[in-house]
Amino acid sequence: MGAGSASAGDVEVLHWWTSGGEARAANVLKELLEAEGHGWEDFAVAGGGGETAMTVLKSRAMSGNPPSAAQIKGPEIQEWGELGLLGDLDAVAEEGGWDDLLPETVAEVMRHDGHYVAVPANVHRVNWLWANPDVLEDAGVEMPTTLDELFSAAEAIREAGYVPLAHGGQAWQDATVFETVLLASAGSDFYQRALVDLDTEALGSEQMIEALETFKRLREIMDDGMSGRDWNIATSMVIEGEAGMQLMGDWAKGEFTAAGLTAGEDYLCAAAPGTADAFTFNIDSLAMFRVTDEAELEAQRTLARLVLEPTFQEAFNLAKGSIPARPDLDMSEFDSCAQQSMKDFQRTAEEGGLVPSMAHGMAVRADIQGAMFDVVTNFFNDRDMAASDAAQRMVNAAQAAL
Ligand code: GAL
Image (cartoon, rainbow, N blue to C red):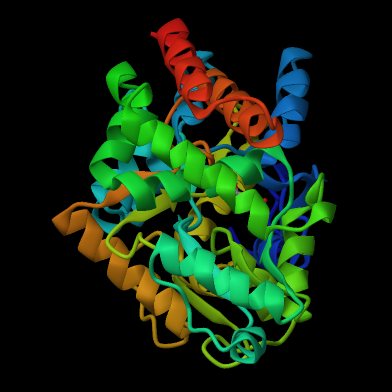
């Protein structure tokens, strides 16, 4: 359908892309949709990680009025599919050859009951460390590659007068850091057993307790002002040279990019200490709700088609910090962090080490994820809770879910 076609319709899109880098990325899709003659009704719900957005989505759906498209990810796509609320994108998928374009790991998340109901925008990597090179230099340290090096670099950074690790004290950010520390201290097989398969033996094990203890030690290298801070404010502390480092997924790169900075020069990226051979993936996707109006349906299909086309995949991901969801695209325009991400994604998919992010809704259903967030954040903020107690609470949460 070209611009001005008779069936031009609107798509209301619910998402949580509201930081500087995220908004630039979302705008790519809005402009492409409008260029095809359809309207974009923006339904942005602020709040990193999307918890608030999902709450708002539920209440809209319960009142019988869901938006036509929403950013829904991982196992949650199945939950919405089971409710019978999602529209079928098979016709668009077939025409666009999605089965051939997408790696099967990605495609299977997008299908419910064998039918495409969502389209992937990207692949984010969660286990990254970001750093300000001037701060590192001033402190006389290199990018840490192990957890021990992270703690010793942090000490030097603090002595040089900076905040070692920028962090925002919000449950999803605590969980983001926790899963990365678990990956570093216990490895990707253990991560898979504990946070994906919810194996109670792994959850209650000595390795889990150790990881929890290391995670809590990270408080010592954060600052007192972290409580409630948004993730992009933490990133701006690294950008401004107030803090040395941040552990965060590569949407942080969207902030560095929006600030006009160059990877490898103005800021540094590396796999989070101790996780070079692993990749926690987080795929953003848009699911379409069932609609009956012909024009709206046409607009939805156009949106779904655009999302997998090279123009969108390239422009969106350059701004977002992620890599394209389809592996066949030319990566030469992408920076060194994205190239590294693409290489590691493919390597870990083949050799092992590729695991879904628990903190970003890729590993377990929303209710279990919520229970895990509670344990992680309560433990992190409670001076008196023992790591063994937190591990036991994880076991209980997993048992309640099975
Ligand atoms: C993630 C999402 C990313 C990014 C981040 C911070 O869950 O996948 O696209 O927006 O939250 O909000």
